[in-house]
Length: 245
Image (cartoon, rainbow, N blue to C red; front, side, top):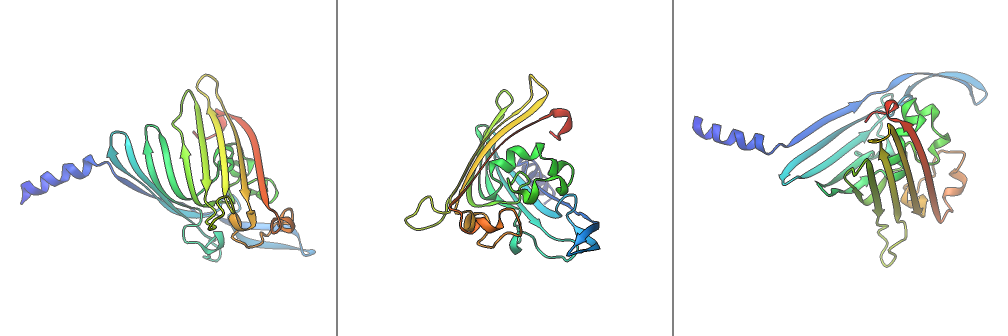
């Protein structure tokens, strides 16, 4: 019996599978000088970064291939309520294959503006108060894309290419409610610099990006319900010493 146990143990180690439980809690006091004409003190979750917990895993398939997955939940510490319109894993939920030729994933994911430009976003590096108002350009990753297929290339001479497509799910209408996104980044080898550019187009953003629920945003809430499409383009750079590689 002891010999059999020893025979099984090396096989488990050889598989090199792993699952990581991770998370972040953000809770603090906020002072508002003018809330409906009066000042107010608030207990607020997500002032610096939104609270979350998640599971991330990989299973070695051999030959440089791995099965990968991420399930990430967002929530409000103050109330215990789920974020992302009540989804259990509303921040991210995807599964895929990582290989020497790149990584393919399927599920609910970030589009390329959020993926490529978040390292240079002030709102993610210095708290949400520094983000563009209402995260109107999604550099802060407020929007995640359902039913999406995503590809991230391996890094070649410092360059990484990313692309995403989301199927709208409308019978007979291939592009209705679809999302197309592309991005390119350079993470300096010859030069100590991170540079990225990305473009995303969302067809019928009210349904495809906002779950047919009007966003609480004074900038674009009046327009998103009638918008046929939303296009976002961005370019950014930052010295490598200022970002987490």
